[in-house]
Every structure is written in C-alpha cells, then in structure tokens.
Image (cartoon, rainbow, N blue to C red):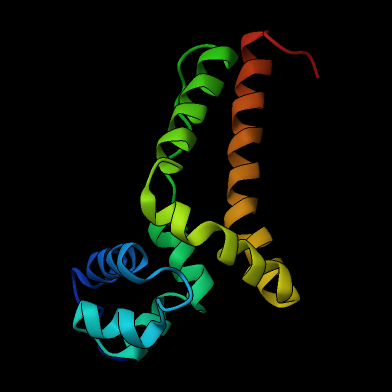
Length: 145
C-alpha cells in the first residue's frame, strides 16, 4: 500500500513552465523556489519533493530532466552521435538557458555536495548513454574493444 498523498498530475509541467517564464522575466538570481511555487500554483513542498535544490530544478527545466529518452539507434555510430548532438544543440538554443547557465554552473561548482549529485544524476545518465552508443558501435563492428 502506497503511503502519503499521490502525486498530482501536471505539477511537474507547471513547475518547469514557471521556471522557464521566471528565468526569461527575472533571470536566475531572482528565480527562487518560492517564486516558482507561487507562479506554478503549488506549495514549496511540492517542488522540493521533486527537486532537491534550485539548481537541480533549473537544470531539469531548461537543460534536460533526470529521465532522458534513450539515445537514438540510427544504425551507425556517426548517425547516433549526430542525433545526440542535434538534441544537445536544440537544448542550448533557449533564452532561458542563456539566462541561467553561468549562475547555475557557479552554484554547482560552489557546492561540493551539489556538484557530486549533478555528476551522479545528470552526467552519470549521459555517460551511460554514451556507453550504450559505443557498445552498439562495437556490436556492429564499427569499433573494436
């Protein structure tokens, strides 16, 4: 039996949209968890149940969420890399990211625990996808072990 109140549908999307809007309007420094919660019409606790910090929330809203789609299998390593680079490029195009990235990176670098978490959660997932792509290339005979 599940304990506690079930998560409400749509909160994640409302919070991410609030983050993007606030970053565009006020910038990273003034985009607080309080302001995000108010803008999304949710309590601060709902935000913190999903994301541990402002930096993690902003990263998930403007760069990519914790859960990523698996890397495309285009049939070749060259095609797989091109597909991933296209996804990366499209994620870097937003004004929200340009507003947030310098301060977001500074926050992550200034907090060793946050930096470790980012490495484990976000970058670890990306490394795993790179391994998948390389393993597929080995299986196809494009690379040797």
